[in-house]
Length: 87
Image 1 (cartoon, rainbow, N blue to C red):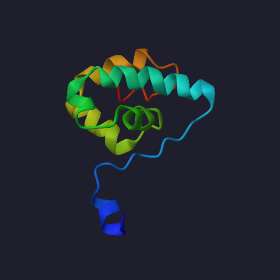
Image 2: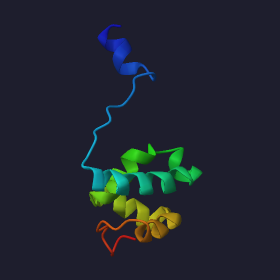
Image 3: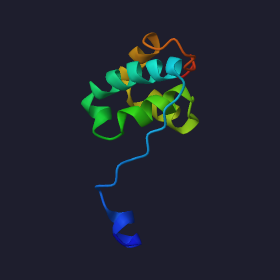
């Protein structure tokens, strides 16, 4: 596969970083919740979005305040500190 084909291919699988077990549990909980929300899961990879929420990604959190009402329920799922002002 040449470089152009690799860049434009939709068949490339994303890299999956494995975090410490405690964090993986939190990621999985959020990932499952996100996957159950088609309006989010169709736009974002659920694992990626879970990690971004746990990292308190400013741009993503601002978007969640405006458009993702179901995300507010995810705060109760995670024991990690997702910013209170966001959700």
